[in-house]
Length: 283
Length: 298
Image (tube, rainbow over all chains, first blue to last red; front, top):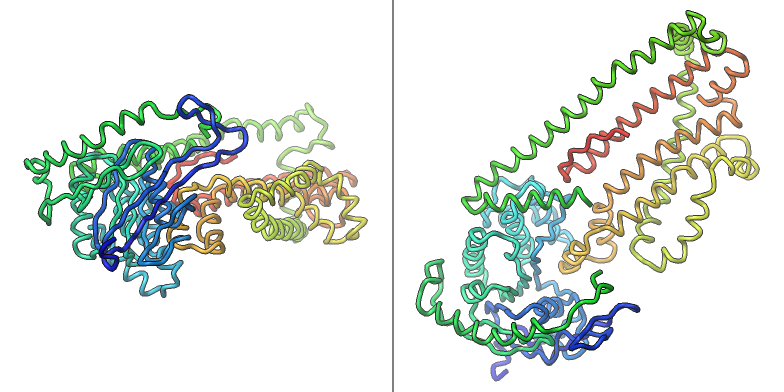
């Protein structure tokens, strides 16, 4: 906050309470309630071009926070500013990548990427050219006409990232994008993401459950508390870039791993004892 | 839904190969799809070939039962006589005329059904208040027989084309509407979220996400609707018309020209089968992105 010009995203005192539908309730701390507070007093400043990873126990509201920053969910309290403007709906400067790819199954790989440009009114020739370029950037040249169900999970997620980057976003929000992939593909894509991020200098907020992934990718790891989520600690990752997979075996990396886990452990334990879903809430 | 799960399941299995090198996975995808396709082809060929002897036996019985006096050939002429009558009707151009009129009535009613049901269904499926308000009326209308309403259509629209089109419209519109609504309701919310994250407007959301995602369900409804409107037009023509296949069948029975009557019935069967195969083909084409292996022709 002492260098406001450098801050791209400023999250101020964000809270979020979900009001359940009539007849639904959850048990929190042994008491039945129809309201659940998932975020409470989140403060976070993110610098331009920074790679931030968010880790925290299940239920700490990481994904909800991402949705609020993306303008897809309204906060109950507090606000988020992007370049000094308050976010109330999806911003054209923001791209979003989901865990389950969320590709349109009736569109080919190329047409999926084009979609992002189509809804922004970009001319046909230009959007095709951009989409082709992005597919090639992700090593998917030749797969333009494949439908999502003809692509492996890793390829689908590459297309989804390409789609999010198509509009040249200044902020990329990623909600556990590699969680559904096997370990090898996951590490491959982490490397690719860093390589591409290095070229385009986009600000990235990346939610993950994996401590390794969080450290490998990040400039700063933000550790969230158990529900209701808030920022517990922010850990600077001073590992040299460009990073490759070998860095995971280094002593520094191990030290960061121990450090993050140390901060996270109590919260994970708390989360284990947290609210349980009643059957009525399961849908 | 089971189908989707199967698809996602197989995509999940592919990750195992992806780790060793993405090109391996690429090579496997068409292989898996091809084998599924072969299996479905084999199965549908099998159905056809296995079914032929019994159908042949049915036609054979039709031929010999009247010939041997097991059935009264005045009421039940042998197949060969029916085919001769059919050829005569075809050669004189009478049959083609009746076919054309019936198909035209069914097609206009169905087309009106599409124009009304799809936009309405998109709204009803998306906005729950819209559906809550209109659901009871839709259910009431849907469960009223189109044939019971034929006298009403005739009173309101006269004995001419309008009342025939009205009954075919009525017969198709609810299949289309109900399936459009259920298609819209089963759109993956994640796709809508993804679309919104890219700044999709409400209008584009309908046009570019909800409608295409609902196409498989709408096409399934369209198949039922086409059949229903074909049935309805024949019924209406039997009850109140001076042309069309339904009229031909009914009139031939009244005139005791039973060979012509059966010729009309056979023609209907052939049309029904042809339309059904066309619709199956259309469904495959319209939902090719699902990479489906559906064999059902029912």
